[in-house]
Image (cartoon, rainbow, N blue to C red; front, side, top):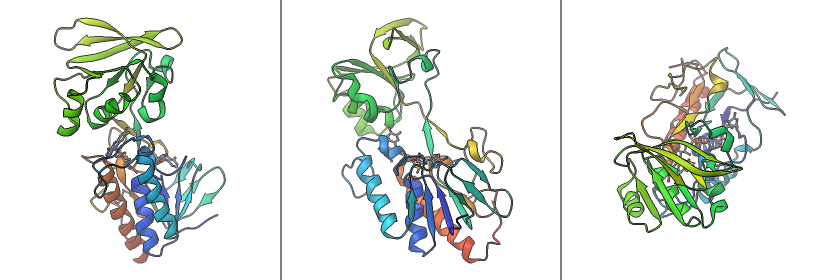
Length: 311
Ligand SMILES: Cc1cc2nc3c(=O)[nH]c(=O)nc-3n(C[C@H](O)[C@H](O)[C@H](O)COP(=O)(O)OP(=O)(O)OC[C@H]3O[C@@H](n4cnc5c(N)ncnc54)[C@H](O)[C@@H]3O)c2cc1C
């Protein structure tokens, strides 16, 4: 049984920042991560809105955060998914395949994953023309026509990235506008390889071994059209990774963790940070802010003799 002061679940920007702050407070910190540190940054090509960097790859930013946490003494254990937790009782326990932990405080920073496209053939073509990560899979579509579904910054940025490979990128957007940054929107609208189809919804994809076409509907007229393409990349939002916590931790109806402004959950000594919690803006800057607040309040909880109540 290992007994760190603070156990952080998840190594995205929220978890890594929490590790930096908790380690600087001289607490014994362990961070458990399913794969390698970075979270959604691992799938992000170019970040242009993180202060201090004109442009930085997700890999570089994640690497720097992890290195900083390690240098300060945090233990980062990769390839160690948390398999079960018991958080409601006084003693908190967390299990991975290889070890059991009994920390004084827990910070949940397990983040979110892309929402699957709600089309009948999603499962049939997943990985064979249905994708959610242009960094990972974009290069498979050299000189091909690909589609991008979504209306936020991620969709706009990933469409631009896909122009490095694809002969043409078709953006399928349900509404008549995008929600992303004006500068990225402008770059998309002016890009010679990108065609934007406003007021179109993706109904399904079809093909043989892989995707060969998409069926879209005009949301104003109901008219359906087939489009020949080799892949569709979905950016229609994310869903939280909270299945493990459902029994102990209060969630909203979509499964996000409820916290107060000190990032306490309903259970004393358990905090939540980043995309995993109920919040209005899910970005790297807000994830690192959460990591800061959660770590400082975990420190307070531990130093005040663990008698702070839950939210
Ligand atoms: C394609 C894309 C582009 C983006 N571009 C930008 C951008 O340009 N600027 C910006 O500010 N934001 C961007 N974002 C959003 C940003 O990446 C997220 O808001 C941010 O990464 C959230 O950080 P997080 O630490 O809360 O969660 P995440 O980054 O989701 O990290 C959570 C981590 O927890 C781990 N985990 C989950 N379950 C377990 C478990 N059971 N055990 C152990 N570990 C677990 C996961 O493996 C993951 O590494 C982008 C997102 C995507 C998908």
